[in-house]
Image 1 (spheres, rainbow, N blue to C red):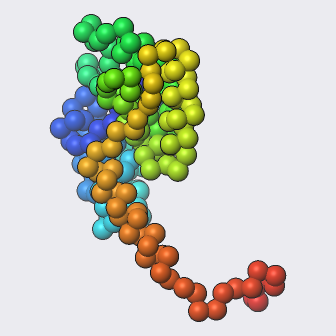
Image 2 (image 1 turned 30 degrees about the horizontal axis):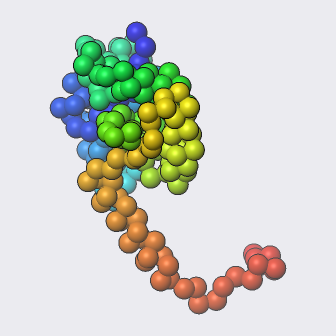
Length: 197
């Protein structure tokens, strides 16, 4: 049984994975994202320190792999799953995502979720390590869009879909950048002299 990438955002969405269920039992875990050769765990917020949960996360992962249990049980439905009612273009897009694009993105701990195809625009959500990655726009436009357009002439554009969490994260990051931008060093270190030890 091959393992497909899956993002679990709550204990209820982790029903089919004992690993994800065990990780959600750790206070401070926000979501669990796993694939055939990676596991990504996100912490809930800034009040939770990695040093407080790291040991528990590593312990849960080690116990899971020692148990020999399968990563998932039962059938899971994912937006990117293939459905009989998908039209030919949507089926081709999903097939290319699954066979050519997703494996490459997953090597870096990310994934792509198909969200729709409308008026020539493929809508995708980047998750895992792709979320907020500075090169995600380049990946989306130069990599994914070019490949889809090469194989599927009906594809005019590829657009990243963002949800409420993405917008909140972007706002917090912008505020943080502004805060650091306002901090001025009183005496900058000269770059031509080595530091005095």
